[in-house]
Amino acid sequence: MKFLADMGISPRTVNWLKTAGYDAVHLVEEGLETLPDDEILVKARLEERVLLTVDLDFGYLLAVSGATLPSVILFRLGNESYEIINERLAEALNRFEQDLATGAIISVSDRDFRVRQLPI
Image (cartoon, rainbow, N blue to C red; front, side):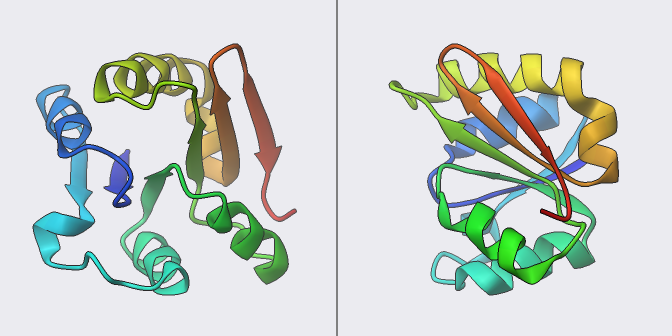
């Protein structure tokens, strides 16, 4: 599984994913800090990457597009430190790998996970 981290995700999370053996990139690594949200989705889709974000706009953009990919993991946490994101991400990957492979938005909160299959 491959990942693309949006600007709200710490580069430390990307490093953690790489250490775990995943192919992961951060927008800042590629000089794409100002890339518009719709183009971030296109990049993730073309590169077959799961988008990691804290930005609610991506769920809306996917819903109105009718697209089946890319999958998005949306973090909605009280504490968005990289340690907490990494912990919740590890659990999401363990539980929802198949959903992510086929196209889903996984909303991650402090208490639970919500899965919405794409298209919405």
